[in-house]
Length: 92
Image (cartoon, rainbow, N blue to C red; front, top):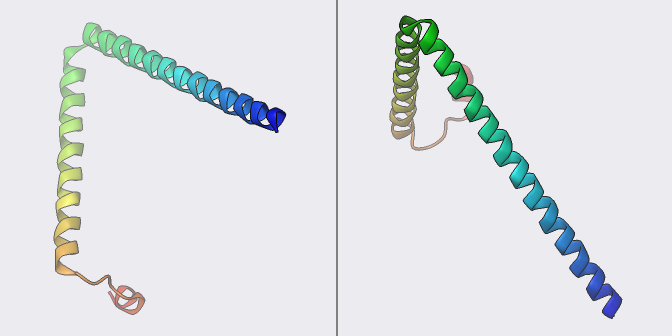
């Protein structure tokens, strides 16, 4: 009984250590990605400011399109309280 308890405790400790290691690795990867993005942005700023303006405009357009799509989905969801049947979807 004691051996089983110690074994299960050891397994739990090993799992916790593995989870902590995975979290640390994920955090390190995120930090590296952020650093790379910052370096790329700095390089773009150094190369040409016009490119940044174009990127900002593209991002704004993408955000506007996403907002419009979400609004359309909400409006359509309000219009159809009951989900459409397969037949009505095929007919449309």
